[in-house]
Image (cartoon, rainbow, N blue to C red):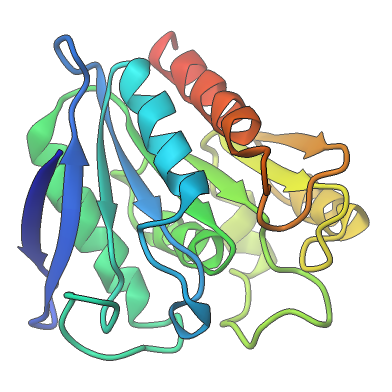
Length: 215
């Protein structure tokens, strides 16, 4: 694991870690963590499992902390300013490997990742885990509008547990219908945190990402 720092366009230095594959990299990936105000950071077992899974499939993986989290400068930006963090992370990851650029976000990170992809054509595919869609969800920026979602003609994995109160299956199906190239996976018995199911979730994400490498 290699510790790195990188700068956002609005002047903050963020901290992260790069995990490289054992062989020559086939692509690059960025991981976006859950809500900064509820304990979210890059250091969570689910994200560790996904990092390992993606590296095993040939991706250079950048895990990072959003602004204001642990050693990253700045302060919480309400989910709006964090889009610039994802763009900066993609910029660093892009210098590490050729091939597809894959972004994976969980919960708050999924909301930010989707909105980053709408405006950043460098992102070739997305995995969105536990996307907050219920009325009880944390206060987050709104989704891109219908036209923006329809224009996102890139592969998107929507992954959730069927016991996730923040991402009810009917609402996730609603989002899937608005994305031109969405794949939806629902894990029976899993909740928002995929407790004791991290490897299972990571395997789904890594398999989806590998299919991206295969074209």
